[in-house]
Image 1 (cartoon, rainbow, N blue to C red):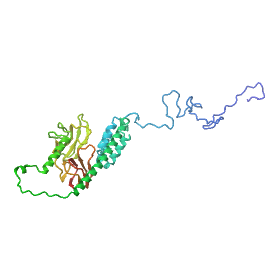
Image 2: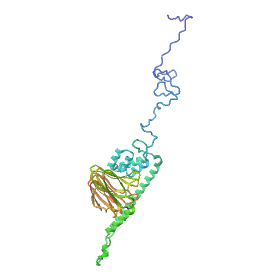
Image 3: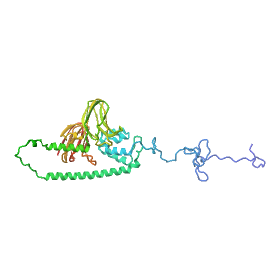
Image 4: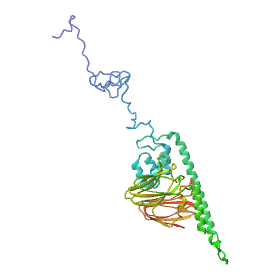
Length: 403
């Protein structure tokens, strides 16, 4: 029975407890009331400003918790503080000198794009240039997405060396072009001179004198021995995969090879630690017969040739001075000596694969890449004055003609 409010002896009844305000309602002080988690009292966790049960709440002193809202998450599976075991300097040099063959991407473990780069010869040079700039700018990563080791330490040096070599190469090319044009003008303006006829019959001593062709051959061979070195030629035969030790002193040489198998046939150069020097001399499928240059583009001194084959093969390693003079036509890979004047070289090729022509005058600043195409080709390119070494890599028949 309810008590009488006017009865002074009646027991005091406490006032009713108001229900909790709904989530998001405004408190008398003007602040919004946070929602409470199930089974938790209202109010923030002391020291955090977060309500109890909030997914962003972290208890004071707890070792873990959710990061603050808006904080960037690190890449999945990659620690940004860990450097790759791949060297920035090695990647930079490979991208610079062997980028058209994709060697830099093979080195970084990117085999797929490395093969694509090799097949397209570095995207006809554009892809190779982009990778070089990407490496110098610090944007290149290894297969695991890690930054290259030593970039912060050597990036300034790499930029300076690259810039100096590019500038010197441009200056050297401009000087060579100017000198070539001057020589061509002088030859064109010089009057023809006829040699007087001699009535004296040739003696035995006169007939024994070397002809101009013989003198030219000796001169270019002597230059090749002095510039690239000489050694005793060596021939080795075998079947299947094997290693071929190079002769002592054979740092630059002509490698002539044959193969009668039907699968992959490859010859690559290794250094004294059995590490690749970056030179892939032969890489073809099926039978092969041709000559290539060893040691002109390697990053280390070669000591061994690694042979991959499924059939019988033969390999002859000889000095560059043993190479023949430039031929007017041929098929497949070949190496020649040249001792003529600077001029225009007209070249054709009827194969479907890579076609590369390189001239090496022994100068460090001259690349000498005359032709770099895929498939049939016909064109005219500038040829520097000899003595020099010309190497041809082709999958079909080719011709050369001096203008």
